[in-house]
Image (cartoon, rainbow, N blue to C red; front, side):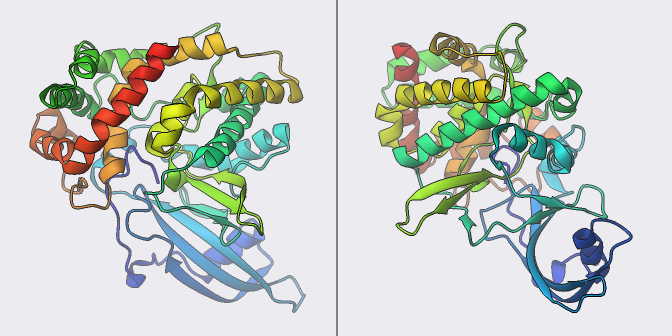
Length: 413
């Protein structure tokens, strides 16, 4: 579920299951190609979505009983079949970019190469897909679970996420050193395009939240934001480009609760995780993944007291992982702080168009962008809709708290 594009919940009724998702499709997927020796005995298809869980894709859970070759032994597998949404604003923004092509590369071998570098499985394994842009994955449930998207994660979860991201980013550096073209093939920008439809939204939103903070009496926070609103989009587009001579990684780009799966031991302690949804990957500074997680999914306690501690854990784990993978690159706390300061314009832009919709998604204040076009945003037709979202009770409560946490962290660097 891509937080930044995923603003529409696509409800799937059982009769909306696509015609192509049939016995023949499943036999090819499980058999690894067109010449499959798998025979499907029976299968059940259901929507794998609950409202508010996912937006840029339709997801189906398929439970299959099958045999292989001449054997009569019946095997069982649960699969997730993922089909991109081809309507509305998401499609309009995504269809002119690599958005729909990235996952085929990730699941077609890149994740496997990354996992081999770290001896760590980063996401679900995939199967052959007979249809372009449709992805077939192993179903990680019930072993791994996606938490309620409203659950704010504590320090224990946050340490796990930061260590996991450090390994993930280190594995990218290692693969990049072997095969830069492979990483570059999934690095295309999908959101921060010079004149993309999100530009007007980000400009309107940053000004609006600055003025809201002013009205609420948070002058210092308001001034901090309003000083940056002129040219915010151009600054954001610029600051996310990879910088020569500095550490760049392929970030996941959409690290929030709905894209994380966690595994627990018998004592119900969280012990492992996996990532989902790689459409928003970009080659840039690693701090983007850290901030997207912190400000969408961590709890107030973590943001108030543990941000620097988590950054230190990240740097330590990243350097250990780079060493383990045989890379010469290293990253220091000073470099991390430089990266954090460098991407301030990105943070404010992504806060208003990526994070705010997550905070209200599924509530009566959530955005319903189904009938909206990029042109509607560019011409300002959507401004009243955005204003309503930014003025709702939930955002008004969160805004001063999140901005205080962010600005005080910046000032402590």
